Image 1 (tube, protein in one colour):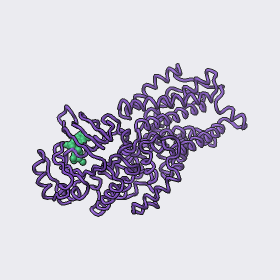
Image 2 (cartoon, chains in turn purple, brown):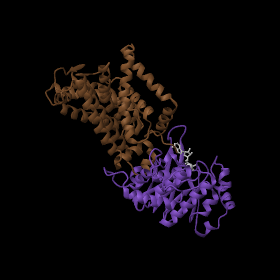
Image 3 (cartoon, rainbow over the protein chains, first blue to last red):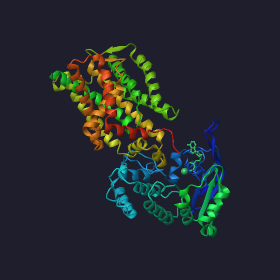
Image 4 (tube, rainbow over the protein chains, first blue to last red):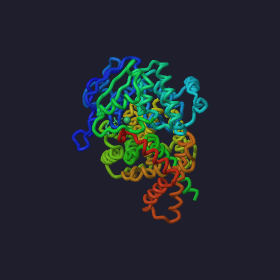
Length: 265
Length: 301
Ligand SMILES: Nc1ncnc2c1ncn2[C@@H]1O[C@H](COP(=O)(O)OP(=O)(O)O)[C@@H](O)[C@H]1O
Ligand SMILES: [Mg+2]
Protein backbone atom coordinates (compact mmCIF):
# COMPACT_ATOMS: atom_id res chain seq x y z
CA UNK A 1 0.00 0.00 0.00
CA UNK A 2 2.93 2.32 0.74
CA UNK A 3 6.38 1.97 -0.72
CA UNK A 4 9.00 4.49 0.31
CA UNK A 5 12.38 4.07 -1.38
CA UNK A 6 15.65 5.82 -0.54
CA UNK A 7 13.96 8.91 0.86
CA UNK A 8 16.14 11.94 1.66
CA UNK A 9 15.11 15.20 3.24
CA UNK A 10 17.51 17.99 4.08
CA UNK A 11 16.32 21.17 5.76
CA UNK A 12 18.08 24.52 5.20
CA UNK A 13 20.47 23.02 2.70
CA UNK A 14 23.66 25.01 2.26
CA UNK A 15 23.25 27.09 5.44
CA UNK A 16 24.82 26.73 8.86
CA UNK A 17 21.49 25.28 9.98
CA UNK A 18 21.60 22.46 7.46
CA UNK A 19 19.99 19.41 8.92
CA UNK A 20 19.58 16.00 7.32
CA UNK A 21 16.16 14.95 8.63
CA UNK A 22 15.76 11.77 6.57
CA UNK A 23 18.62 9.73 5.21
CA UNK A 24 17.94 6.92 2.77
CA UNK A 25 14.70 5.76 4.36
CA UNK A 26 13.05 2.76 2.72
CA UNK A 27 9.86 1.23 3.99
CA UNK A 28 7.09 -0.94 2.60
CA UNK A 29 3.66 -1.25 4.18
CA UNK A 30 1.28 -4.00 3.15
CA UNK A 31 -2.43 -3.39 2.98
CA UNK A 32 -3.85 -3.48 6.48
CA UNK A 33 -0.52 -2.99 8.24
CA UNK A 34 -0.72 -0.97 11.44
CA UNK A 35 2.76 0.30 12.17
CA UNK A 36 3.69 2.14 15.33
CA UNK A 37 6.66 4.49 15.06
CA UNK A 38 8.84 5.55 17.97
CA UNK A 39 12.14 7.41 18.28
CA UNK A 40 13.80 10.29 20.10
CA UNK A 41 13.12 13.95 19.48
CA UNK A 42 14.36 14.99 16.07
CA UNK A 43 14.69 11.41 14.82
CA UNK A 44 12.72 12.30 11.71
CA UNK A 45 9.33 10.73 12.47
CA UNK A 46 7.24 13.78 11.66
CA UNK A 47 9.36 14.56 8.62
CA UNK A 48 8.75 11.06 7.27
CA UNK A 49 4.99 11.43 7.68
CA UNK A 50 5.05 14.94 6.25
CA UNK A 51 6.99 13.78 3.19
CA UNK A 52 4.52 10.97 2.63
CA UNK A 53 1.67 13.48 2.96
CA UNK A 54 3.36 15.94 0.60
CA UNK A 55 3.87 18.77 3.08
CA UNK A 56 7.53 18.94 1.99
CA UNK A 57 8.96 17.74 -1.29
CA UNK A 58 11.69 15.15 -0.62
CA UNK A 59 15.25 15.83 -1.78
CA UNK A 60 15.65 12.30 -3.06
CA UNK A 61 13.90 8.96 -3.26
CA UNK A 62 10.35 8.05 -4.16
CA UNK A 63 6.99 7.54 -2.52
CA UNK A 64 4.43 5.18 -4.03
CA UNK A 65 0.91 4.88 -2.61
CA UNK A 66 -1.12 1.93 -3.85
CA UNK A 67 0.95 1.65 -7.02
CA UNK A 68 0.82 5.37 -7.85
CA UNK A 69 4.02 7.40 -7.66
CA UNK A 70 3.08 10.49 -5.62
CA UNK A 71 6.60 11.79 -4.99
CA UNK A 72 6.00 15.04 -6.89
CA UNK A 73 2.26 15.30 -6.34
CA UNK A 74 1.02 18.42 -4.51
CA UNK A 75 -0.15 17.95 -0.94
CA UNK A 76 -3.78 18.73 -1.73
CA UNK A 77 -3.81 16.26 -4.61
CA UNK A 78 -2.65 13.27 -2.61
CA UNK A 79 -4.93 14.18 0.26
CA UNK A 80 -7.67 12.06 -1.30
CA UNK A 81 -5.71 8.93 -0.43
CA UNK A 82 -4.62 10.02 3.01
CA UNK A 83 -6.17 10.59 6.40
CA UNK A 84 -4.11 12.62 8.84
CA UNK A 85 -4.29 13.54 12.50
CA UNK A 86 -1.68 15.88 13.94
CA UNK A 87 -0.11 16.39 17.34
CA UNK A 88 -1.59 19.87 17.66
CA UNK A 89 -5.37 19.61 18.09
CA UNK A 90 -5.68 23.07 16.49
CA UNK A 91 -4.14 21.89 13.28
CA UNK A 92 -6.61 19.31 12.04
CA UNK A 93 -9.82 21.34 12.17
CA UNK A 94 -11.12 24.82 11.40
CA UNK A 95 -11.83 26.54 14.71
CA UNK A 96 -14.11 29.21 13.23
CA UNK A 97 -16.28 26.74 11.36
CA UNK A 98 -18.79 24.46 12.99
CA UNK A 99 -18.67 20.70 13.43
CA UNK A 100 -20.83 19.83 10.45
CA UNK A 101 -18.90 22.19 8.17
CA UNK A 102 -15.64 20.58 9.18
CA UNK A 103 -17.05 17.11 8.54
CA UNK A 104 -18.44 18.26 5.21
CA UNK A 105 -15.01 19.55 4.16
CA UNK A 106 -13.55 16.13 4.94
CA UNK A 107 -16.31 14.33 3.12
CA UNK A 108 -15.44 16.22 -0.07
CA UNK A 109 -11.76 15.36 0.14
CA UNK A 110 -10.54 14.35 -3.30
CA UNK A 111 -13.80 15.30 -5.00
CA UNK A 112 -14.35 18.33 -7.18
CA UNK A 113 -15.91 21.20 -5.23
CA UNK A 114 -18.56 23.18 -7.00
CA UNK A 115 -21.43 25.52 -6.28
CA UNK A 116 -23.72 23.06 -4.55
CA UNK A 117 -24.28 23.51 -0.84
CA UNK A 118 -21.28 23.00 1.42
CA UNK A 119 -23.41 20.87 3.77
CA UNK A 120 -26.64 19.14 2.74
CA UNK A 121 -29.49 18.14 5.00
CA UNK A 122 -28.97 14.46 4.25
CA UNK A 123 -25.32 14.62 5.27
CA UNK A 124 -26.30 16.28 8.49
CA UNK A 125 -28.23 13.17 9.53
CA UNK A 126 -25.28 10.96 8.65
CA UNK A 127 -22.93 13.11 10.72
CA UNK A 128 -25.29 12.97 13.65
CA UNK A 129 -25.20 9.17 13.53
CA UNK A 130 -21.41 9.07 13.21
CA UNK A 131 -20.92 11.43 16.11
CA UNK A 132 -23.33 9.45 18.21
CA UNK A 133 -21.21 6.34 17.60
CA UNK A 134 -18.21 8.33 18.83
CA UNK A 135 -19.90 8.65 22.21
CA UNK A 136 -18.61 12.14 23.04
CA UNK A 137 -21.98 13.87 23.10
CA UNK A 138 -21.18 15.85 19.97
CA UNK A 139 -24.22 14.66 18.02
CA UNK A 140 -26.35 17.50 19.38
CA UNK A 141 -23.72 20.14 18.71
CA UNK A 142 -23.44 19.95 14.93
CA UNK A 143 -23.67 23.71 14.60
CA UNK A 144 -21.21 24.49 17.42
CA UNK A 145 -17.93 26.13 16.42
CA UNK A 146 -15.09 23.62 16.65
CA UNK A 147 -13.03 26.23 18.51
CA UNK A 148 -15.31 25.61 21.50
CA UNK A 149 -14.42 21.91 21.76
CA UNK A 150 -11.83 20.43 24.10
CA UNK A 151 -8.54 19.10 22.74
CA UNK A 152 -9.72 15.51 23.06
CA UNK A 153 -12.98 16.25 21.27
CA UNK A 154 -11.10 18.00 18.50
CA UNK A 155 -8.75 15.06 18.05
CA UNK A 156 -11.65 12.61 17.98
CA UNK A 157 -13.37 14.80 15.40
CA UNK A 158 -10.18 15.03 13.35
CA UNK A 159 -9.90 11.24 13.46
CA UNK A 160 -13.46 10.94 12.27
CA UNK A 161 -12.70 13.41 9.47
CA UNK A 162 -9.54 11.52 8.51
CA UNK A 163 -11.43 8.25 8.18
CA UNK A 164 -14.77 9.53 6.88
CA UNK A 165 -13.78 8.46 3.40
CA UNK A 166 -11.71 5.31 3.94
CA UNK A 167 -8.13 6.50 3.29
CA UNK A 168 -5.54 4.26 1.67
CA UNK A 169 -3.20 5.34 4.39
CA UNK A 170 -3.86 6.80 7.82
CA UNK A 171 -1.08 8.95 9.28
CA UNK A 172 -1.24 9.69 13.01
CA UNK A 173 1.56 11.90 14.33
CA UNK A 174 1.60 11.81 18.14
CA UNK A 175 -2.06 12.62 17.96
CA UNK A 176 -2.60 12.01 21.66
CA UNK A 177 0.55 13.73 22.94
CA UNK A 178 -1.17 17.02 23.73
CA UNK A 179 -4.00 15.39 25.69
CA UNK A 180 -4.26 14.52 29.36
CA UNK A 181 -3.63 10.82 30.07
CA UNK A 182 -7.27 9.82 30.42
CA UNK A 183 -8.37 11.57 27.25
CA UNK A 184 -5.29 10.30 25.43
CA UNK A 185 -6.25 6.74 26.33
CA UNK A 186 -9.78 7.24 25.07
CA UNK A 187 -8.66 8.74 21.76
CA UNK A 188 -6.09 5.98 21.33
CA UNK A 189 -8.65 3.26 21.92
CA UNK A 190 -11.00 4.96 19.53
CA UNK A 191 -8.23 5.09 16.92
CA UNK A 192 -7.51 1.40 17.37
CA UNK A 193 -11.20 0.59 16.96
CA UNK A 194 -11.56 2.68 13.81
CA UNK A 195 -8.38 1.20 12.34
CA UNK A 196 -9.34 -2.43 12.94
CA UNK A 197 -12.96 -1.97 11.87
CA UNK A 198 -11.85 -0.37 8.61
CA UNK A 199 -8.77 -2.55 8.14
CA UNK A 200 -6.89 0.72 7.58
CA UNK A 201 -3.23 0.78 6.65
CA UNK A 202 -1.80 3.02 9.36
CA UNK A 203 1.38 4.68 10.56
CA UNK A 204 1.07 5.92 14.12
CA UNK A 205 3.87 7.90 15.72
CA UNK A 206 3.76 7.68 19.49
CA UNK A 207 6.04 8.77 22.30
CA UNK A 208 4.80 5.98 24.50
CA UNK A 209 6.72 2.69 24.26
CA UNK A 210 3.96 0.72 25.92
CA UNK A 211 1.41 1.96 23.39
CA UNK A 212 3.84 1.26 20.57
CA UNK A 213 4.04 -2.35 21.73
CA UNK A 214 0.36 -2.76 22.55
CA UNK A 215 -1.06 -1.47 19.28
CA UNK A 216 -0.45 -2.52 15.70
CA UNK A 217 1.24 -5.47 14.05
CA UNK A 218 4.59 -3.86 13.39
CA UNK A 219 6.92 -1.47 15.18
CA UNK A 220 9.52 0.87 13.75
CA UNK A 221 12.13 2.80 15.68
CA UNK A 222 13.65 5.80 13.97
CA UNK A 223 16.96 7.34 14.84
CA UNK A 224 19.10 10.01 13.21
CA UNK A 225 16.90 10.19 10.13
CA UNK A 226 16.84 6.47 9.48
CA UNK A 227 14.97 3.34 10.50
CA UNK A 228 16.97 1.62 13.21
CA UNK A 229 14.62 -1.15 14.26
CA UNK A 230 11.78 -2.83 12.40
CA UNK A 231 9.98 -5.71 14.10
CA UNK A 232 6.68 -7.37 13.36
CA UNK A 233 4.57 -10.43 14.03
CA UNK A 234 5.41 -12.66 16.97
CA UNK A 235 8.64 -10.84 17.64
CA UNK A 236 6.76 -7.60 18.14
CA UNK A 237 4.12 -9.20 20.36
CA UNK A 238 6.82 -10.47 22.70
CA UNK A 239 8.65 -7.14 23.00
CA UNK A 240 8.99 -5.49 26.39
CA UNK A 241 9.77 -1.91 27.26
CA UNK A 242 13.18 -3.09 28.50
CA UNK A 243 13.92 -4.67 25.11
CA UNK A 244 12.98 -1.42 23.40
CA UNK A 245 15.18 0.63 25.71
CA UNK A 246 18.15 -1.60 24.94
CA UNK A 247 17.48 -1.34 21.22
CA UNK A 248 17.17 2.38 21.59
CA UNK A 249 20.50 2.68 23.43
CA UNK A 250 22.20 0.78 20.66
CA UNK A 251 20.61 2.73 17.84
CA UNK A 252 20.47 6.26 19.06
CA UNK A 253 22.30 8.94 17.17
CA UNK A 254 24.44 11.72 18.56
CA UNK A 255 22.61 14.04 20.88
CA UNK A 256 19.39 12.05 20.85
CA UNK A 257 18.08 11.58 24.33
CA UNK A 258 15.43 9.21 25.47
CA UNK A 259 12.71 11.56 26.60
CA UNK A 260 11.50 10.59 30.05
CA UNK A 261 7.96 10.62 28.82
CA UNK A 262 8.79 7.85 26.36
CA UNK A 263 9.63 5.45 29.15
CA UNK A 264 7.18 6.60 31.76
CA UNK A 265 4.18 7.35 29.53
CA UNK B 1 -27.83 69.06 8.53
CA UNK B 2 -30.18 66.74 6.68
CA UNK B 3 -28.07 67.23 3.60
CA UNK B 4 -24.95 66.20 5.46
CA UNK B 5 -26.63 63.05 6.74
CA UNK B 6 -27.94 62.08 3.32
CA UNK B 7 -24.48 62.68 1.89
CA UNK B 8 -22.84 60.55 4.57
CA UNK B 9 -25.34 57.72 4.27
CA UNK B 10 -25.11 57.58 0.48
CA UNK B 11 -21.32 57.66 0.52
CA UNK B 12 -21.35 55.03 3.28
CA UNK B 13 -23.52 52.69 1.22
CA UNK B 14 -21.14 52.90 -1.72
CA UNK B 15 -18.07 52.43 0.47
CA UNK B 16 -19.87 49.48 2.08
CA UNK B 17 -19.33 47.56 -1.15
CA UNK B 18 -15.62 48.24 -0.73
CA UNK B 19 -15.75 47.29 2.95
CA UNK B 20 -17.29 43.92 2.08
CA UNK B 21 -14.43 43.42 -0.38
CA UNK B 22 -11.93 44.17 2.38
CA UNK B 23 -13.82 41.81 4.65
CA UNK B 24 -13.22 38.98 2.17
CA UNK B 25 -9.48 39.52 1.99
CA UNK B 26 -8.87 40.57 5.58
CA UNK B 27 -11.35 38.55 7.62
CA UNK B 28 -12.06 35.53 5.45
CA UNK B 29 -8.61 35.00 3.94
CA UNK B 30 -6.61 36.67 6.70
CA UNK B 31 -4.54 39.01 4.54
CA UNK B 32 -4.25 42.78 4.32
CA UNK B 33 -4.60 43.19 0.56
CA UNK B 34 -3.12 46.52 -0.51
CA UNK B 35 -4.35 45.94 -4.07
CA UNK B 36 -7.56 47.57 -2.83
CA UNK B 37 -6.04 51.05 -3.10
CA UNK B 38 -5.37 50.51 -6.80
CA UNK B 39 -8.50 48.61 -7.71
CA UNK B 40 -10.90 51.18 -6.26
CA UNK B 41 -9.35 53.85 -8.51
CA UNK B 42 -9.23 51.40 -11.40
CA UNK B 43 -12.97 50.83 -11.08
CA UNK B 44 -13.71 54.54 -11.00
CA UNK B 45 -11.40 55.22 -13.94
CA UNK B 46 -12.76 52.44 -16.16
CA UNK B 47 -16.37 53.39 -15.49
CA UNK B 48 -15.66 57.08 -16.06
CA UNK B 49 -13.88 56.43 -19.35
CA UNK B 50 -16.74 54.20 -20.49
CA UNK B 51 -19.25 56.96 -19.80
CA UNK B 52 -17.06 59.74 -21.22
CA UNK B 53 -16.69 57.63 -24.36
CA UNK B 54 -20.46 57.48 -24.73
CA UNK B 55 -20.96 54.01 -23.26
CA UNK B 56 -23.71 53.03 -20.85
CA UNK B 57 -23.00 53.68 -17.15
CA UNK B 58 -24.14 50.10 -16.47
CA UNK B 59 -21.61 48.78 -18.94
CA UNK B 60 -19.12 50.93 -17.01
CA UNK B 61 -19.98 49.07 -13.80
CA UNK B 62 -19.56 45.72 -15.50
CA UNK B 63 -16.19 46.65 -17.00
CA UNK B 64 -15.03 48.02 -13.64
CA UNK B 65 -16.00 44.71 -12.03
CA UNK B 66 -14.05 42.72 -14.61
CA UNK B 67 -10.97 44.96 -14.29
CA UNK B 68 -11.09 44.56 -10.51
CA UNK B 69 -11.15 40.80 -10.98
CA UNK B 70 -8.07 41.05 -13.19
CA UNK B 71 -6.26 43.10 -10.53
CA UNK B 72 -7.15 40.52 -7.88
CA UNK B 73 -5.98 37.75 -10.18
CA UNK B 74 -2.60 39.46 -10.67
CA UNK B 75 -2.07 39.81 -6.95
CA UNK B 76 -3.24 36.23 -6.35
CA UNK B 77 -0.79 34.86 -8.89
CA UNK B 78 2.10 36.90 -7.49
CA UNK B 79 1.34 35.63 -4.00
CA UNK B 80 0.56 31.97 -4.67
CA UNK B 81 2.60 31.07 -7.73
CA UNK B 82 5.63 33.32 -7.22
CA UNK B 83 5.44 32.92 -3.42
CA UNK B 84 5.71 36.66 -2.72
CA UNK B 85 4.44 37.47 0.80
CA UNK B 86 0.88 38.77 0.55
CA UNK B 87 1.59 42.24 1.94
CA UNK B 88 4.37 42.81 -0.58
CA UNK B 89 2.49 41.30 -3.51
CA UNK B 90 -0.39 43.64 -2.74
CA UNK B 91 1.92 46.67 -2.60
CA UNK B 92 3.45 45.63 -5.92
CA UNK B 93 0.06 45.24 -7.58
CA UNK B 94 -1.11 48.54 -6.13
CA UNK B 95 1.97 50.33 -7.42
CA UNK B 96 1.65 48.80 -10.86
CA UNK B 97 -2.02 49.78 -10.93
CA UNK B 98 -1.05 53.41 -10.43
CA UNK B 99 0.48 53.42 -13.91
CA UNK B 100 -2.37 51.37 -15.33
CA UNK B 101 -4.89 53.82 -13.92
CA UNK B 102 -2.99 56.75 -15.40
CA UNK B 103 -3.14 55.03 -18.78
CA UNK B 104 -6.85 54.37 -18.44
CA UNK B 105 -7.61 57.97 -17.51
CA UNK B 106 -4.98 59.69 -19.61
CA UNK B 107 -4.89 62.53 -17.05
CA UNK B 108 -5.20 63.04 -13.30
CA UNK B 109 -9.00 63.24 -13.32
CA UNK B 110 -12.03 62.84 -15.51
CA UNK B 111 -15.14 64.93 -15.02
CA UNK B 112 -18.56 63.34 -15.49
CA UNK B 113 -20.52 66.56 -15.13
CA UNK B 114 -23.75 66.55 -17.15
CA UNK B 115 -23.15 62.98 -18.24
CA UNK B 116 -25.47 60.05 -17.52
CA UNK B 117 -24.66 57.92 -14.48
CA UNK B 118 -26.23 54.79 -13.02
CA UNK B 119 -28.13 57.12 -10.70
CA UNK B 120 -29.73 59.43 -13.26
CA UNK B 121 -32.37 56.97 -14.61
CA UNK B 122 -33.33 56.06 -11.03
CA UNK B 123 -33.61 59.72 -10.07
CA UNK B 124 -35.85 60.57 -12.99
CA UNK B 125 -37.91 57.39 -12.69
CA UNK B 126 -38.66 57.89 -9.00
CA UNK B 127 -38.68 61.68 -9.23
CA UNK B 128 -36.07 62.10 -6.48
CA UNK B 129 -32.88 64.12 -6.39
CA UNK B 130 -29.44 62.63 -6.91
CA UNK B 131 -28.55 62.21 -3.25
CA UNK B 132 -31.59 60.02 -2.60
CA UNK B 133 -31.12 58.08 -5.83
CA UNK B 134 -27.58 57.18 -4.70
CA UNK B 135 -29.08 55.82 -1.49
CA UNK B 136 -31.67 53.81 -3.43
CA UNK B 137 -29.08 52.31 -5.79
CA UNK B 138 -26.63 51.73 -2.94
CA UNK B 139 -29.24 49.89 -0.87
CA UNK B 140 -30.22 47.62 -3.75
CA UNK B 141 -26.60 46.83 -4.64
CA UNK B 142 -25.63 46.13 -1.02
CA UNK B 143 -28.65 43.85 -0.59
CA UNK B 144 -27.83 41.92 -3.76
CA UNK B 145 -24.17 41.56 -2.79
CA UNK B 146 -25.00 40.39 0.73
CA UNK B 147 -27.46 37.85 -0.68
CA UNK B 148 -25.00 36.54 -3.24
CA UNK B 149 -22.12 36.28 -0.80
CA UNK B 150 -24.29 34.64 1.82
CA UNK B 151 -25.12 31.99 -0.75
CA UNK B 152 -21.59 31.73 -2.17
CA UNK B 153 -19.81 31.21 1.14
CA UNK B 154 -22.27 28.44 1.92
CA UNK B 155 -21.32 26.47 -1.19
CA UNK B 156 -18.56 23.90 -1.46
CA UNK B 157 -16.14 26.38 -3.02
CA UNK B 158 -17.12 29.08 -0.53
CA UNK B 159 -16.57 26.71 2.40
CA UNK B 160 -13.19 25.77 0.96
CA UNK B 161 -12.22 29.46 0.81
CA UNK B 162 -13.27 29.98 4.42
CA UNK B 163 -11.33 26.89 5.49
CA UNK B 164 -8.25 28.19 3.66
CA UNK B 165 -8.32 31.45 5.59
CA UNK B 166 -9.04 29.73 8.86
CA UNK B 167 -6.51 26.87 8.70
CA UNK B 168 -4.54 26.39 5.48
CA UNK B 169 -2.85 23.23 6.77
CA UNK B 170 -6.18 21.59 7.43
CA UNK B 171 -7.52 22.83 4.10
CA UNK B 172 -4.71 21.17 2.18
CA UNK B 173 -5.03 17.99 4.23
CA UNK B 174 -8.67 17.93 3.12
CA UNK B 175 -7.68 18.15 -0.51
CA UNK B 176 -8.31 21.85 -1.00
CA UNK B 177 -6.10 23.59 -3.55
CA UNK B 178 -5.31 26.56 -1.32
CA UNK B 179 -3.59 28.50 -4.12
CA UNK B 180 -6.82 28.41 -6.06
CA UNK B 181 -9.07 29.34 -3.15
CA UNK B 182 -6.82 32.29 -2.27
CA UNK B 183 -6.94 33.49 -5.87
CA UNK B 184 -10.73 33.17 -6.04
CA UNK B 185 -11.05 35.11 -2.79
CA UNK B 186 -8.80 37.92 -4.01
CA UNK B 187 -10.57 38.10 -7.37
CA UNK B 188 -13.92 38.38 -5.62
CA UNK B 189 -12.63 40.96 -3.16
CA UNK B 190 -11.14 43.22 -5.82
CA UNK B 191 -14.16 42.87 -8.07
CA UNK B 192 -16.28 44.36 -5.28
CA UNK B 193 -13.73 47.06 -4.53
CA UNK B 194 -13.52 48.15 -8.17
CA UNK B 195 -17.32 48.12 -8.39
CA UNK B 196 -17.39 50.33 -5.34
CA UNK B 197 -14.92 52.71 -7.01
CA UNK B 198 -17.12 52.89 -10.11
CA UNK B 199 -20.17 53.70 -8.00
CA UNK B 200 -18.33 56.32 -5.94
CA UNK B 201 -16.89 58.01 -9.03
CA UNK B 202 -20.30 58.32 -10.63
CA UNK B 203 -21.88 59.63 -7.45
CA UNK B 204 -19.34 62.46 -7.15
CA UNK B 205 -19.24 63.10 -10.92
CA UNK B 206 -15.53 62.60 -11.33
CA UNK B 207 -12.82 59.99 -11.20
CA UNK B 208 -9.56 61.02 -9.63
CA UNK B 209 -6.20 59.27 -9.69
CA UNK B 210 -5.73 59.80 -5.94
CA UNK B 211 -9.09 58.52 -4.72
CA UNK B 212 -7.68 55.14 -3.65
CA UNK B 213 -5.09 56.56 -1.29
CA UNK B 214 -5.85 55.36 2.21
CA UNK B 215 -8.82 53.29 1.03
CA UNK B 216 -7.70 50.11 2.79
CA UNK B 217 -7.54 51.90 6.14
CA UNK B 218 -11.01 53.36 5.58
CA UNK B 219 -12.24 49.84 4.75
CA UNK B 220 -10.65 48.43 7.90
CA UNK B 221 -12.02 51.24 10.08
CA UNK B 222 -15.54 50.56 8.76
CA UNK B 223 -15.05 46.82 9.24
CA UNK B 224 -13.97 47.24 12.86
CA UNK B 225 -16.82 49.65 13.61
CA UNK B 226 -19.27 47.08 12.25
CA UNK B 227 -17.61 44.30 14.21
CA UNK B 228 -17.57 46.20 17.50
CA UNK B 229 -21.20 47.25 17.23
CA UNK B 230 -22.75 44.05 15.95
CA UNK B 231 -20.38 41.24 16.92
CA UNK B 232 -19.82 38.08 14.95
CA UNK B 233 -23.07 36.27 15.59
CA UNK B 234 -23.61 34.85 12.15
CA UNK B 235 -22.50 35.40 8.61
CA UNK B 236 -25.56 37.36 7.55
CA UNK B 237 -25.19 39.75 10.46
CA UNK B 238 -21.48 40.10 9.80
CA UNK B 239 -22.05 41.09 6.19
CA UNK B 240 -24.80 43.51 7.16
CA UNK B 241 -22.59 44.97 9.87
CA UNK B 242 -20.04 45.89 7.19
CA UNK B 243 -22.67 48.11 5.60
CA UNK B 244 -23.63 49.60 8.92
CA UNK B 245 -19.96 50.12 9.77
CA UNK B 246 -19.27 51.94 6.50
CA UNK B 247 -22.26 54.24 7.00
CA UNK B 248 -21.40 54.97 10.62
CA UNK B 249 -17.82 55.71 9.63
CA UNK B 250 -19.07 58.34 7.16
CA UNK B 251 -21.39 59.82 9.76
CA UNK B 252 -18.52 60.08 12.23
CA UNK B 253 -16.35 61.76 9.61
CA UNK B 254 -19.12 64.20 8.70
CA UNK B 255 -19.59 64.94 12.39
CA UNK B 256 -15.94 65.62 13.19
CA UNK B 257 -15.62 67.79 10.08
CA UNK B 258 -18.62 69.75 11.23
CA UNK B 259 -16.98 70.14 14.63
CA UNK B 260 -14.15 71.89 12.84
CA UNK B 261 -11.50 69.24 12.23
CA UNK B 262 -9.52 70.26 9.13
CA UNK B 263 -10.17 67.93 6.18
CA UNK B 264 -6.40 67.53 5.84
CA UNK B 265 -6.36 65.51 9.06
CA UNK B 266 -8.96 62.97 7.93
CA UNK B 267 -6.51 60.21 7.07
CA UNK B 268 -4.60 60.69 10.31
CA UNK B 269 -7.88 60.48 12.19
CA UNK B 270 -8.88 57.29 10.35
CA UNK B 271 -5.51 55.65 10.93
CA UNK B 272 -5.73 56.41 14.64
CA UNK B 273 -9.23 54.94 14.72
CA UNK B 274 -7.90 51.71 13.25
CA UNK B 275 -4.98 51.61 15.68
CA UNK B 276 -7.40 52.06 18.58
CA UNK B 277 -9.69 49.36 17.23
CA UNK B 278 -6.77 46.98 16.83
CA UNK B 279 -5.67 47.53 20.41
CA UNK B 280 -9.10 47.33 22.04
CA UNK B 281 -9.19 44.03 23.96
CA UNK B 282 -11.87 42.06 22.07
CA UNK B 283 -10.85 43.17 18.62
CA UNK B 284 -7.21 42.63 19.39
CA UNK B 285 -7.80 38.98 20.15
CA UNK B 286 -9.75 38.49 16.95
CA UNK B 287 -7.05 40.17 14.89
CA UNK B 288 -4.36 38.01 16.45
CA UNK B 289 -6.12 34.72 15.86
CA UNK B 290 -6.45 35.82 12.26
CA UNK B 291 -2.77 36.52 11.99
CA UNK B 292 -1.96 33.06 13.30
CA UNK B 293 -4.00 31.53 10.52
CA UNK B 294 -2.33 33.57 7.79
CA UNK B 295 -2.29 31.36 4.72
CA UNK B 296 0.99 30.75 3.02
CA UNK B 297 2.87 31.61 6.19
CA UNK B 298 5.87 29.59 7.34
CA UNK B 299 5.06 25.98 8.01
CA UNK B 300 5.93 24.66 11.42
CA UNK B 301 7.19 21.11 11.82
N1 LIG C 1 10.39 22.70 8.81
C1 LIG C 1 11.61 22.42 9.27
N2 LIG C 1 12.63 23.27 9.06
C2 LIG C 1 13.85 23.01 9.51
N3 LIG C 1 14.20 21.90 10.18
C3 LIG C 1 13.23 21.01 10.44
C4 LIG C 1 11.90 21.22 10.00
N4 LIG C 1 11.14 20.15 10.39
C5 LIG C 1 11.99 19.34 11.04
N5 LIG C 1 13.24 19.82 11.07
C6 LIG C 1 14.41 19.19 11.67
O1 LIG C 1 14.47 17.88 11.17
C7 LIG C 1 14.79 16.96 12.21
C8 LIG C 1 13.71 15.93 12.34
O2 LIG C 1 12.56 16.54 12.87
P1 LIG C 1 11.18 15.77 13.08
O3 LIG C 1 10.89 14.96 11.90
O4 LIG C 1 10.19 16.79 13.47
O5 LIG C 1 11.53 14.84 14.33
P2 LIG C 1 10.57 13.98 15.26
O6 LIG C 1 9.18 14.11 14.77
O7 LIG C 1 11.09 12.60 15.15
O8 LIG C 1 10.77 14.51 16.63
C9 LIG C 1 14.99 17.79 13.46
O9 LIG C 1 16.35 18.06 13.60
C10 LIG C 1 14.25 19.07 13.16
O10 LIG C 1 14.85 20.14 13.81
MG1 LIG D 1 7.42 14.92 15.68
